[in-house]
Image 1 (cartoon, rainbow, N blue to C red):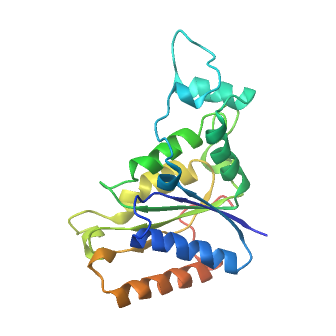
Image 2: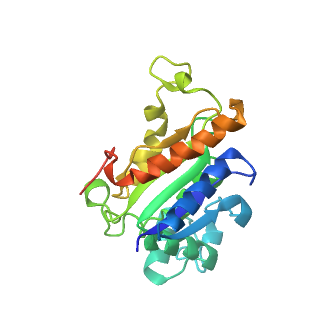
Length: 223
């Protein structure tokens, strides 16, 4: 049985972005997958990485976050709520980030999840490789997201620039950096401007995307 972790970052549970998260969760459950959801706003997840990540500090004279992450990885010193998220990441076969595009990137809540959970010594470093030698080569990752603007705004000639360039820090700098196979994103373009019928059609498009998960051509892969 494959295991799916959806990490979702939207403050409104009735938003269309949240509907996409729910649709993905229900789809995978209907197919017999085991699914866990980290709904960061509902969890009141703390996105700030600092000394409070650790049960004990190795160097009290000079705080270096990555050094403390390595120490915590080696000595089981992450605080319980953070360790729980790390355990979910290690557990899953498929990782999904679900979010609205804010200021050309991840909402701070989700970026902070990456800062804290993709810890040095756990995801990379401390003897673990990156990219082709990444520790999570057995995992697949992709994005399910919404935008404020229409699709034509996110092309080479669009006002906002190419969406592939915008998502590069996520696809390449987070997922592939950790060694994961990265699939093309599912993007719902400007759902706030769509009719109810059009939004229902977007949910059908998502199900079709998920039906074809095994045949999507990866953006990056080590397999």
